Amino acid sequence: MPYPVFDNHVHLQENGENVLAAKRFEKEGGRIINLCNIPGIYKPVDLKYFMDQYERIVRIADLVRKETSLNVLVTVGPYPVDLIKSSEIIGLENAKELFLDAIELAITYVQDGKANAVGEIGRPHFQVDENIWIVSNEILSYALKRAGKEKIPVVLHTESADEKVFNELSIMAEKSGIDKNFVIKHFSPPLILEEENHGIFPSVISSRDNIREAINKGFRFFMETDFLDDPMKKGAVMDITTVPKRFKMLENENKELLEKYSYELKENLFKIYRLELKDF
Ligand SMILES: [Zn+2]
Image (cartoon, rainbow, N blue to C red):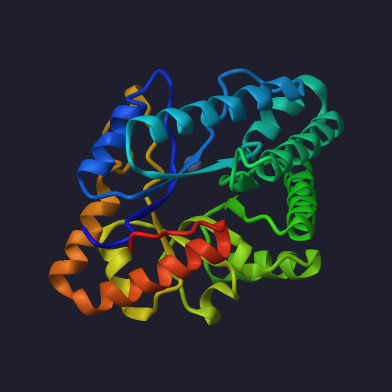
């Protein structure tokens, strides 16, 4: 397909399908993939826990680059739900310090060219203890401020976003001084209009209905699957071939819209991730 077919949120695991899943994505027409680290199975007590995760996804990205022609982006950061696990062992204050260090570590990965964005970071997607919520927001504000200063994009994991949540995130982003184009909301509904997302950049979960709705409103959005590559959860989440299939669907339904979307997608990939695509 002559389009920059991009999945903005994919997890690959060494004990999962790993590079074979990337090959399936490519075979279906996929061209660009953003690989996000996956939380470990242990409770985080030190920075090594995060460094191991970041290193693992960097290794997987290198393997995918070697064995496919995909453009591979990498996103590293401390998974928000891990704050709960961490606080159970080392206490909330220490867990907060650890998370701030993990954010700093993620920033150095981007600065060293090993990663392209910090994420998925944010706050748990379910109701939590009030103190966890407060500290999660403090960590998020810190990350937005630091990423803003270093001009690094951030991928957010939060509760499901409606206009109210988008507004709140937008206010946080404004206070921290980060360009809101650099604040990408993972697992977003098709709220792609400025008045719906208040300038936060939506990464839309790629059901057929979501994608049709989004593209009929505009072009400022990414598509994603949140493919988990978890052998235990096969079929529970969207398959890695979904985004290429949506491009094919749009090509059949409205080629003109897809071409406009692709043009803007290419611009956004450059503006946000600094990815320069030559062959589109
Ligand atoms: Zn994810």
